[in-house]
Image 1 (cartoon, one colour):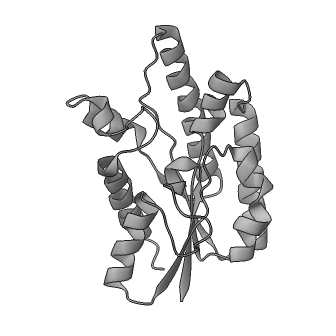
Image 2 (cartoon, helix red, strand yellow):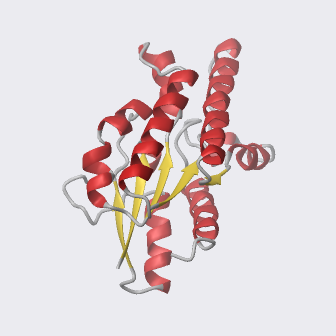
Length: 208
């Protein structure tokens, strides 16, 4: 049986029940797992280790327990918005430079410990608007810097990269933004479905 691990922040967490390992939350990990499990009975086992509020440093801090010990055949990671948002809300963010450095360390350690594991990096995204236009612009620009860093890392280590921001912008240009992200950060069921569909398509190219 192949093991699939979803890793990230609250977007991946999806309000999962931590005490129940089989609970995959209410977001894209659940949607992906439902489809894969339906089409491939008992071929895969699924783990969701996303945690609300996590930044790249938090994921790196739990790399042993929540990635390496699980030994996934396939791992997807979505992280970056809290590295920006926590700087704005709590003065505890992670700079773009440090984000890229720690993310690279995370990937290098995973590849060293689990050389057969295939990895997908998912692009962080945002539509959040603040009363202060300068703040809105800053949030967007800073998330974009993390997105660019994530793409560079995927390219550097020859990993799968799932882009989302442009598609999100295009969809939001013809609807209210909260149709896709309920608070400018967390997806509604509709954007979770979009992520799951794109995830599924990309996973299908791996042959796992």
